[in-house]
Image 1 (cartoon, rainbow, N blue to C red):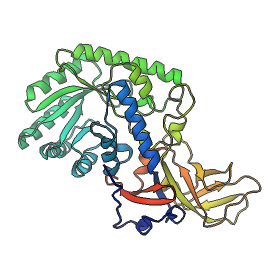
Image 2 (cartoon, rainbow, N blue to C red; image 1 turned 120 degrees about the horizontal axis):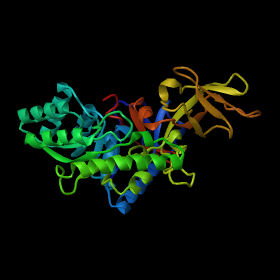
Image 3 (cartoon, rainbow, N blue to C red; image 1 turned 120 degrees about the vertical axis):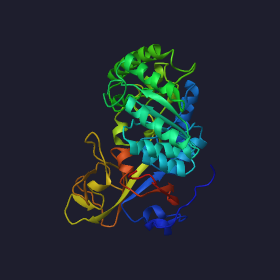
Image 4 (tube, rainbow, N blue to C red; image 1 turned 30 degrees about the vertical axis):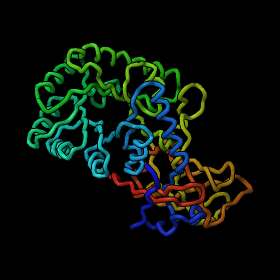
Length: 384
């Protein structure tokens, strides 16, 4: 995809698109995407997948942004993952033609929405861990004379969803093969419990345990599966250990495109260096500086999401050694080293604790190249 497709309607900072010094003039709080780092991360992850001989299907739940999804596909991804029917709808309407919804579903309403996507011409893949899901989607597809691919979701140890025995998985496979409108494509083996495991040795051991479960499932399902089944899974925090199993054919990593402070704590390969540099920041303004040693910003708890209690990390505009913490719904506090100050009106940039849910707090991404605002991309699947 060429060009940045500047979007201007309805966004407060649209007047700054194309301005060479826009970064210092943004209305805040504003979610910033470092465009060049974002593209570098896409290329790096795609290169890793290519070298490993697997396909890359990035997870769109990380960014919820069709503009970003299109660029991931342009970089070599086979399609996009979605976490919800709403996300899948948004991506399909935006022209993403190959979508895997990675969450199981168990209501008629969800099945109807998903069948509508399949009937629209999108190449839709689903996952199921119960006969309820299989029967609902088969009926909804039949009503629309549509088809979809389906993968058996297996429980790799997180106990969130998935078939927990070979016998249960075989029962699902038998039911799928009898439907006539569902193509059994393979297995989903997502081990999300590995993604933020900071210690490399422990994460490697846990990945080996996942591999044992996956090998047993693949062997038990072999008569039911196609000759070259899809085995999809993988996360930004554990993809190296998962690739080392030599069982996966497709990676679902998503956060690699953005990164955050929590992933910075994960040692991917023993080097102690994050797998990818950060491309996502929040710009926030100092709105009061009357108290020595501290200032107040307009970036409070409503602007940051954290899974592990990690605080936002100051990356630009503040004195070395300063620390940031949201202190109320609408306000943040910067604690300053002795002898330093930060005047009211200053803009600082903060690395977010957890990228996926933080993105969901904003309407748009401000795409920056250096100091220039190149485009504003809607987070179109926000809340979906």
